[in-house]
Image: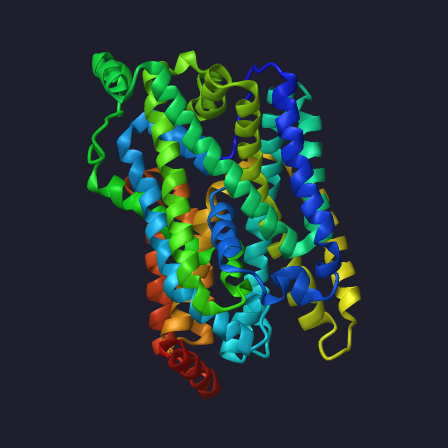
Length: 505
């Protein structure tokens, strides 16, 4: 979903200028956030739990979208039409639930127990002194996150090289260096603030492009008329009817939303807010933002089909090239520069978040909590080590992308589903069902990951429904069944009851 193929675009000076301004803004944010993020590991990975509702709202929604929304959903809408709405409806609904309910409980529990990461949360929730939960969680996070970051770099490189003539390899390096610079310097604060800026770029681009394209075509009525005149055999599965999809297809598309409660780089946003009660405001802001961006992506796909009835009219006959190609042919160079910036905003808002989550897994969960457990380590040393780890993770992601690009993209197909199916059910049950046990969570983590991979590799099963749905269901059932046959630590249940009581107040 992250692959942005080659597009022939002239590097107009005005387009380059607007893009450079965008880059300067996010790098400056990284520099300004350096002092705050250097104060300690809590500041570096969670901004000291001092983030405001507006920043949390935008950071949460854009860090979960990546380039999939801009190139994946627009391409899907180009091929399928209005039925692509089900692919965005699922995550919009689920993330509203996360803001209003799960996010509050997670924020309150992690503050009470001084948890900075999800492995932290699992260990304190189940009093796991064996480190099995922590290590299992970190392994799953590292496998998916490093591969995902590598794919983001590759996507950025291709877009960079195609848009500004730098070449794909140079584009990958520039993308990686930019993400590395502000993530390493400013930590979570810089990442969240740049996410806010990038969210603004994304929504401007996603609203401006379809409106201008529709106006230039002669209006929405003319778009519909043009689509009705295209040979149905050419359109294939395309339809302006959102219900022109099988029940299994609708459920599968809606099931995409099940990935949100299991992706750590989204969940840590709720953990970072200064007041959990403010998540109600974040819910409103985030849902509106999610809806508007989704509206723009779907309408780009539909109007794009009117402009280019057959795929061969698009660069490399690839529907995922529709978004930048439509922009390059219909927008002023300054606006086109914003469009390219929005692609990088989507890529970077995901890559930087995933780097921080992966780095926290190494520094906080492996080094501090296992390797040097019980020893006094200065906060400055932990922050320094975190920055060093981020550098190494970027290098590993670059190497992985260079020598095993097929493996990277194979893994990234499972990243959203794998994380969603493994962490989603276990996080939800851990927060809302006090009977959940350590053994049940381990069963859920492992089964969610394995079922995702197995289901995806069996063509017959994959053709029935998106692998995240069955993997999420099986992970949930196994977590419950195993928990019923094992005993939870009484202290954990008591702590959860206290958090629940406080939540109700």
